[in-house]
Length: 157
Image (cartoon, rainbow, N blue to C red; front, top):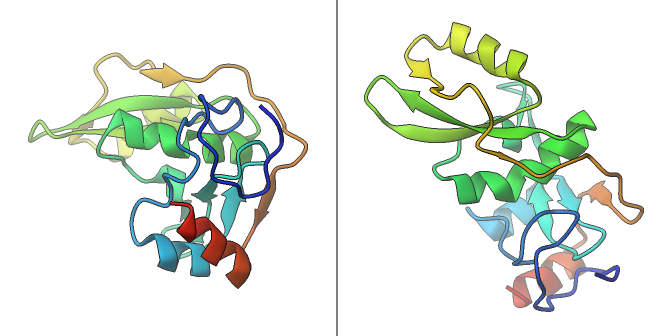
């Protein structure tokens, strides 16, 4: 796949950000997110992924629980990039039986999370999804978008 500068062309799964839809994110309040949050801009397909740090919680978007494995996969690249390693997505079940998915850099991080959250379990204690070896990509950017870039990105969704 060739380098793209925020273009909305159809393509197969991106080797950098692991998605086959280069305008699928942000999922919630996309305009607000693009205007106010720092974005991981895929240097391969141009997809923007929120990588904003929440100072109140001390977390980035990828640290939050996701409703589905598919949604977690959309944010996996930001975890890989932040930690500079291949991370995994784990299936977590709470005491009411609700399933969510969380990204961790290693099994020890999962174990620490479970010790702090006694009402949650991870049956397999292994990731349900890992993309592979971590790679750096030369055209990746992490920054806030300009108003022109936001307008173009939103028009291509």
